[in-house]
Image (tube, rainbow, N blue to C red; front, side):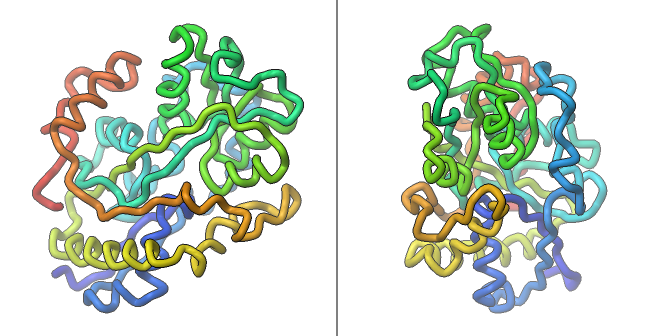
Amino acid sequence: MADKKTRVEVNNAVFSLPYYVARDEGYFDEEGIEVELIRAGSGRDRDLDVPDKPIEDHTMVESYGWHKGIEEGEFSLYRACEWGQIRRTQDSANDVRVISKRAAVATQAIIVAPDSPCNIPSDLANKTVAVNFHAGSHYVTLGLLGGYLERDEIKAVHVGGPKQRFDAVTNGTVDAAAVMEPWVSVAEKLDYKVIAEAYYDGAEVAMPSLDPDAYAAIDRAVKKAVVKLNESLDPYLHYLCSEVPPEICELKPEELHKPRLRYNDPRPYTEAEYEYIYEWMTSWNLLDEESVYDKIVEEKVA
Protein backbone atom coordinates (compact mmCIF):
# COMPACT_ATOMS: atom_id res chain seq x y z
CA MET A 1 0.00 0.00 0.00
CA ALA A 2 1.10 3.56 -0.68
CA ASP A 3 2.70 5.04 2.41
CA LYS A 4 1.50 8.60 1.84
CA LYS A 5 -1.79 10.21 2.74
CA THR A 6 -4.61 9.72 0.22
CA ARG A 7 -6.55 12.92 -0.39
CA VAL A 8 -10.24 12.48 -1.17
CA GLU A 9 -12.71 15.19 -2.14
CA VAL A 10 -16.03 15.43 -0.30
CA ASN A 11 -18.84 17.57 -1.67
CA ASN A 12 -22.48 17.80 -0.55
CA ALA A 13 -22.92 15.63 2.53
CA VAL A 14 -25.69 13.50 1.03
CA PHE A 15 -23.19 12.18 -1.56
CA SER A 16 -20.14 11.79 0.69
CA LEU A 17 -21.72 10.76 3.99
CA PRO A 18 -20.06 7.30 4.00
CA TYR A 19 -16.65 9.01 3.92
CA TYR A 20 -17.51 11.16 6.94
CA VAL A 21 -18.74 8.05 8.76
CA ALA A 22 -15.61 6.09 7.83
CA ARG A 23 -13.46 8.90 9.23
CA ASP A 24 -15.55 9.49 12.37
CA GLU A 25 -15.86 5.79 13.23
CA GLY A 26 -12.16 5.09 12.62
CA TYR A 27 -12.70 2.72 9.69
CA PHE A 28 -9.89 4.24 7.63
CA ASP A 29 -7.57 3.74 10.59
CA GLU A 30 -8.73 0.13 10.94
CA GLU A 31 -7.78 -0.45 7.31
CA GLY A 32 -4.35 1.05 7.85
CA ILE A 33 -4.78 3.99 5.51
CA GLU A 34 -4.45 7.70 6.17
CA VAL A 35 -7.19 9.64 4.38
CA GLU A 36 -7.55 13.41 4.25
CA LEU A 37 -11.01 14.68 3.27
CA ILE A 38 -10.79 17.79 1.07
CA ARG A 39 -13.81 20.06 0.75
CA ALA A 40 -15.03 20.61 -2.81
CA GLY A 41 -14.53 24.00 -4.39
CA SER A 42 -11.05 24.88 -3.15
CA GLY A 43 -12.46 27.37 -0.64
CA ARG A 44 -14.61 29.21 -3.17
CA ASP A 45 -17.92 30.82 -2.20
CA ARG A 46 -20.72 29.42 -4.33
CA ASP A 47 -22.76 32.61 -3.90
CA LEU A 48 -19.99 34.39 -5.80
CA ASP A 49 -20.14 31.82 -8.62
CA VAL A 50 -23.75 32.61 -9.56
CA PRO A 51 -23.96 34.02 -13.11
CA ASP A 52 -25.51 37.46 -13.67
CA LYS A 53 -28.41 35.69 -15.35
CA PRO A 54 -29.16 31.99 -15.82
CA ILE A 55 -27.09 30.40 -18.60
CA GLU A 56 -29.13 28.60 -21.25
CA ASP A 57 -26.34 26.92 -23.26
CA HIS A 58 -24.56 24.02 -21.54
CA THR A 59 -21.51 24.46 -23.78
CA MET A 60 -20.85 27.78 -22.00
CA VAL A 61 -20.22 26.02 -18.67
CA GLU A 62 -17.12 23.95 -17.91
CA SER A 63 -17.96 20.38 -17.01
CA TYR A 64 -15.60 20.22 -14.01
CA GLY A 65 -17.24 23.08 -12.14
CA TRP A 66 -16.89 22.56 -8.40
CA HIS A 67 -14.67 19.48 -8.83
CA LYS A 68 -11.80 21.00 -10.80
CA GLY A 69 -9.40 20.23 -7.96
CA ILE A 70 -8.71 16.76 -9.34
CA GLU A 71 -7.32 18.38 -12.48
CA GLU A 72 -5.10 20.57 -10.30
CA GLY A 73 -3.76 17.74 -8.15
CA GLU A 74 -5.64 18.67 -4.97
CA PHE A 75 -7.02 15.14 -4.48
CA SER A 76 -6.95 11.78 -6.22
CA LEU A 77 -10.50 10.46 -5.71
CA TYR A 78 -13.99 11.96 -5.71
CA ARG A 79 -17.61 11.11 -6.45
CA ALA A 80 -20.56 12.77 -8.18
CA CYS A 81 -23.47 11.82 -10.46
CA GLU A 82 -22.63 9.12 -13.00
CA TRP A 83 -23.50 11.23 -16.06
CA GLY A 84 -21.35 14.13 -14.87
CA GLN A 85 -18.48 11.81 -14.02
CA ILE A 86 -18.56 10.35 -17.51
CA ARG A 87 -18.48 13.83 -19.03
CA ARG A 88 -15.68 15.06 -16.73
CA THR A 89 -13.64 11.95 -17.49
CA GLN A 90 -14.02 12.68 -21.20
CA ASP A 91 -12.87 16.28 -20.63
CA SER A 92 -9.96 15.44 -18.32
CA ALA A 93 -6.44 16.47 -19.23
CA ASN A 94 -5.05 14.16 -16.50
CA ASP A 95 -6.35 10.81 -17.74
CA VAL A 96 -8.76 10.31 -14.82
CA ARG A 97 -11.09 7.32 -15.00
CA VAL A 98 -14.42 6.16 -13.61
CA ILE A 99 -13.56 3.23 -11.34
CA SER A 100 -16.84 2.23 -9.63
CA LYS A 101 -20.35 3.21 -8.68
CA ARG A 102 -20.47 5.31 -5.49
CA ALA A 103 -22.18 4.25 -2.27
CA ALA A 104 -24.79 7.04 -2.25
CA VAL A 105 -28.02 6.62 -4.18
CA ALA A 106 -29.22 10.21 -4.42
CA THR A 107 -32.42 11.93 -5.41
CA GLN A 108 -33.17 15.22 -7.10
CA ALA A 109 -36.59 16.86 -6.89
CA ILE A 110 -37.90 19.63 -9.12
CA ILE A 111 -39.51 22.20 -6.85
CA VAL A 112 -41.53 25.37 -7.39
CA ALA A 113 -42.55 28.20 -5.06
CA PRO A 114 -45.66 27.76 -2.90
CA ASP A 115 -47.69 30.17 -5.05
CA SER A 116 -46.55 28.73 -8.39
CA PRO A 117 -49.34 27.72 -10.79
CA CYS A 118 -47.31 24.61 -11.72
CA ASN A 119 -48.39 21.32 -10.19
CA ILE A 120 -47.39 18.53 -12.60
CA PRO A 121 -44.34 18.03 -14.84
CA SER A 122 -46.16 19.03 -18.04
CA ASP A 123 -46.86 22.43 -16.45
CA LEU A 124 -43.14 23.13 -16.80
CA ALA A 125 -43.23 23.33 -20.59
CA ASN A 126 -41.02 26.28 -21.58
CA LYS A 127 -40.53 27.17 -17.89
CA THR A 128 -37.00 27.75 -16.64
CA VAL A 129 -35.65 25.07 -14.30
CA ALA A 130 -32.48 26.00 -12.38
CA VAL A 131 -29.77 23.34 -12.50
CA ASN A 132 -26.01 23.02 -12.25
CA PHE A 133 -24.94 22.13 -15.78
CA HIS A 134 -23.04 18.82 -16.09
CA ALA A 135 -24.19 17.74 -12.61
CA GLY A 136 -27.00 15.55 -11.31
CA SER A 137 -29.59 18.33 -11.26
CA HIS A 138 -29.02 18.92 -14.99
CA TYR A 139 -29.26 15.32 -16.11
CA VAL A 140 -32.14 14.37 -13.81
CA THR A 141 -34.14 17.36 -15.05
CA LEU A 142 -33.67 16.26 -18.67
CA GLY A 143 -34.57 12.68 -17.80
CA LEU A 144 -37.60 13.52 -15.66
CA LEU A 145 -39.17 16.09 -17.96
CA GLY A 146 -38.32 14.11 -21.09
CA GLY A 147 -41.16 11.75 -20.25
CA TYR A 148 -43.69 14.60 -20.29
CA LEU A 149 -42.40 17.26 -22.67
CA GLU A 150 -40.83 17.62 -26.08
CA ARG A 151 -37.11 18.20 -25.80
CA ASP A 152 -37.36 21.78 -27.06
CA GLU A 153 -39.89 22.52 -24.32
CA ILE A 154 -37.41 21.64 -21.55
CA LYS A 155 -35.65 24.82 -20.38
CA ALA A 156 -32.89 23.75 -17.99
CA VAL A 157 -30.72 26.77 -17.13
CA HIS A 158 -27.45 26.95 -15.21
CA VAL A 159 -27.55 28.80 -11.88
CA GLY A 160 -25.08 26.94 -9.64
CA GLY A 161 -25.19 24.99 -6.37
CA PRO A 162 -28.30 23.75 -4.56
CA LYS A 163 -28.64 26.78 -2.26
CA GLN A 164 -28.22 29.08 -5.23
CA ARG A 165 -30.89 27.19 -7.17
CA PHE A 166 -33.24 27.34 -4.19
CA ASP A 167 -32.59 31.08 -3.91
CA ALA A 168 -33.35 31.51 -7.63
CA VAL A 169 -36.82 30.00 -7.14
CA THR A 170 -37.39 32.08 -4.01
CA ASN A 171 -36.55 35.38 -5.69
CA GLY A 172 -38.36 34.56 -8.93
CA THR A 173 -35.28 34.42 -11.18
CA VAL A 174 -36.47 31.00 -12.43
CA ASP A 175 -39.74 29.11 -12.43
CA ALA A 176 -38.43 25.93 -10.82
CA ALA A 177 -35.26 24.27 -9.57
CA ALA A 178 -33.84 20.78 -9.18
CA VAL A 179 -32.35 20.18 -5.72
CA MET A 180 -31.11 17.27 -3.62
CA GLU A 181 -31.28 16.70 0.14
CA PRO A 182 -31.29 18.54 2.48
CA TRP A 183 -32.89 21.08 0.13
CA VAL A 184 -35.87 18.90 -0.76
CA SER A 185 -36.73 18.74 2.94
CA VAL A 186 -36.14 22.49 3.25
CA ALA A 187 -38.56 23.05 0.37
CA GLU A 188 -41.20 20.85 1.97
CA LYS A 189 -40.79 22.54 5.35
CA LEU A 190 -41.35 25.94 3.71
CA ASP A 191 -44.36 24.69 1.71
CA TYR A 192 -42.70 24.70 -1.70
CA LYS A 193 -44.22 22.18 -4.09
CA VAL A 194 -42.41 19.08 -5.39
CA ILE A 195 -43.31 18.55 -9.04
CA ALA A 196 -41.25 15.43 -9.75
CA GLU A 197 -38.49 13.43 -8.11
CA ALA A 198 -36.04 10.74 -9.23
CA TYR A 199 -33.29 8.61 -7.72
CA TYR A 200 -29.98 8.09 -9.48
CA ASP A 201 -26.55 6.52 -9.11
CA GLY A 202 -23.19 8.19 -8.89
CA ALA A 203 -19.64 7.18 -9.72
CA GLU A 204 -16.19 7.34 -8.19
CA VAL A 205 -13.47 8.90 -10.34
CA ALA A 206 -9.76 8.50 -9.63
CA MET A 207 -6.43 9.81 -10.84
CA PRO A 208 -4.11 7.24 -12.48
CA SER A 209 -1.76 7.76 -9.53
CA LEU A 210 -4.25 6.31 -7.03
CA ASP A 211 -2.67 3.17 -5.62
CA PRO A 212 -4.96 0.12 -6.10
CA ASP A 213 -4.17 -1.13 -2.59
CA ALA A 214 -5.07 2.28 -1.16
CA TYR A 215 -8.37 2.25 -3.02
CA ALA A 216 -9.09 -1.28 -1.81
CA ALA A 217 -8.59 -0.11 1.80
CA ILE A 218 -10.83 2.93 1.21
CA ASP A 219 -13.46 0.71 -0.37
CA ARG A 220 -13.48 -1.64 2.64
CA ALA A 221 -13.81 1.32 5.02
CA VAL A 222 -16.67 2.79 2.98
CA LYS A 223 -18.47 -0.55 3.00
CA LYS A 224 -18.21 -0.61 6.80
CA ALA A 225 -19.67 2.89 6.82
CA VAL A 226 -22.57 1.76 4.64
CA VAL A 227 -23.38 -0.94 7.20
CA LYS A 228 -23.27 1.67 9.96
CA LEU A 229 -25.53 4.07 8.06
CA ASN A 230 -28.05 1.36 7.33
CA GLU A 231 -28.16 0.54 11.04
CA SER A 232 -29.04 4.16 11.84
CA LEU A 233 -28.74 7.43 9.97
CA ASP A 234 -29.54 9.54 13.03
CA PRO A 235 -26.00 10.17 14.39
CA TYR A 236 -24.89 11.61 11.04
CA LEU A 237 -27.84 13.72 9.89
CA HIS A 238 -26.24 16.84 11.34
CA TYR A 239 -23.88 16.86 8.36
CA LEU A 240 -26.83 17.52 6.05
CA CYS A 241 -28.63 19.98 8.31
CA SER A 242 -25.50 22.09 8.72
CA GLU A 243 -25.54 22.88 5.00
CA VAL A 244 -28.69 24.98 5.35
CA PRO A 245 -27.98 28.61 6.34
CA PRO A 246 -30.03 29.74 9.36
CA GLU A 247 -31.43 32.70 7.43
CA ILE A 248 -33.30 30.24 5.19
CA CYS A 249 -34.55 27.99 7.97
CA GLU A 250 -33.42 25.83 10.85
CA LEU A 251 -33.69 22.32 9.51
CA LYS A 252 -33.75 19.73 12.28
CA PRO A 253 -32.56 16.16 11.74
CA GLU A 254 -36.05 14.80 12.40
CA GLU A 255 -37.37 16.96 9.54
CA LEU A 256 -35.26 15.15 6.96
CA HIS A 257 -37.16 12.47 5.07
CA LYS A 258 -34.87 9.56 5.87
CA PRO A 259 -36.17 7.16 3.18
CA ARG A 260 -34.56 9.51 0.64
CA LEU A 261 -31.14 8.71 2.09
CA ARG A 262 -30.00 5.42 0.56
CA TYR A 263 -26.53 3.87 0.74
CA ASN A 264 -25.28 0.68 -0.90
CA ASP A 265 -21.88 -0.94 -1.28
CA PRO A 266 -19.85 0.58 -4.13
CA ARG A 267 -19.76 -1.78 -7.11
CA PRO A 268 -18.22 -2.06 -10.58
CA TYR A 269 -19.55 0.10 -13.39
CA THR A 270 -20.62 -2.42 -16.05
CA GLU A 271 -20.37 -1.98 -19.79
CA ALA A 272 -24.11 -2.62 -20.19
CA GLU A 273 -24.95 0.20 -17.78
CA TYR A 274 -22.50 2.48 -19.51
CA GLU A 275 -23.86 1.78 -22.97
CA TYR A 276 -27.36 2.93 -22.02
CA ILE A 277 -26.07 6.18 -20.48
CA TYR A 278 -23.72 6.72 -23.44
CA GLU A 279 -26.60 6.52 -25.93
CA TRP A 280 -28.71 8.92 -23.89
CA MET A 281 -25.94 11.47 -23.37
CA THR A 282 -24.84 11.50 -26.99
CA SER A 283 -28.46 11.98 -28.05
CA TRP A 284 -28.46 15.22 -26.03
CA ASN A 285 -25.03 16.28 -27.39
CA LEU A 286 -23.63 16.01 -23.86
CA LEU A 287 -20.93 13.45 -24.74
CA ASP A 288 -18.68 12.80 -27.73
CA GLU A 289 -19.36 9.65 -29.72
CA GLU A 290 -15.70 8.66 -29.25
CA SER A 291 -16.16 8.42 -25.45
CA VAL A 292 -16.80 4.69 -25.38
CA TYR A 293 -16.61 2.47 -22.29
CA ASP A 294 -12.92 1.57 -22.57
CA LYS A 295 -11.95 5.24 -22.73
CA ILE A 296 -13.97 6.24 -19.66
CA VAL A 297 -14.01 3.29 -17.22
CA GLU A 298 -10.97 1.66 -15.63
CA GLU A 299 -11.88 -1.65 -14.03
CA LYS A 300 -8.42 -2.62 -12.82
CA VAL A 301 -8.30 -0.20 -9.86
CA ALA A 302 -11.63 -1.32 -8.48
